[in-house]
Image (cartoon, rainbow, N blue to C red; front, top):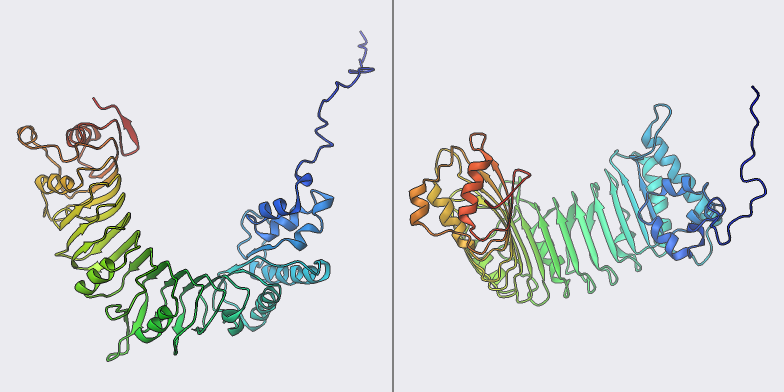
Length: 448
């Protein structure tokens, strides 16, 4: 039997005010400034590919003030094996040519990021030079160069428009002297040389990461930053004056700006205990302090302004006392056998990583006594690395006071294969009788 084909919706009137999904292009109706802001989160190669989506976008990527080039080409699928560095350099050249050809005269570059982990030869470095020079001429404000073995041109450090500068993995000696506009400077894996007193009147954030320098250069740099607020010294090195090998930078005799510093991060540096005490106690505006990889310190810190403290020492015989009445957050990684005292009545949240030090060197009593230092905590993450079974006798619990009477929220991880979560839960509930939520090794538990 033959079937009759029926034409649907024939003669029906379109519902009034019904949106035409195929014809509507809401993104293209956005103002240019908002579209450029959306573009700023994407690598430039994606902007070029997206130019096929809309006629309005076909030339718009050429005028975007945010440029991000990454040789990894993440999220890009190739049909055949390609030389990523060659493709990256070709893409750089094509983008620069289109930019010069179609860019409007009053268009500026706000941010330029160049990231490649391949070591560049002379020809490849010239391609990067062309982009950097063009960006400087276009009044770039933020420049991020993560190019292995690339020698940053000297004019970059003195560019009048530049406000933020990041240079990673370069091969040059960074000779700094002056910049009136720079507010954020980050150097990684370079040799730092500051022969004379620098002038960075606008610099607020300074990060030196794995930088090779010396006392004189660092002092000349930091002395020229009168309004600096954030200072990060992460594994800086200096040449030993007698033996000639690289060693930790000694900051004991460096004069830090005391009036404006709000954030201080010190990782793997050398500093005399008394000098470290005077330095921190003499910063009246200090709110965030990070001390990592300090060997066997014996310090006593007093700070009324400190709100955030991260303390991760290294070595035996560590002794530390912190009197911080306004502290609200604490990150602490240590052995429970170390003598550490925290006087922080307003402490709200803590992230603790505790161990017994191996070789059965700490006991249950040490752990309870240590936690009692933090009896004002309301929220805590606790990681425990224990070398033996943690046994918490019932009779001792009946005669001891819970160390965390005010704790409300607890998340714990125990790196001990011999201990069951249920046993740990029982002990933690005893430690924190007022706890409301408990999570152990990613599993939630009821209080009882």
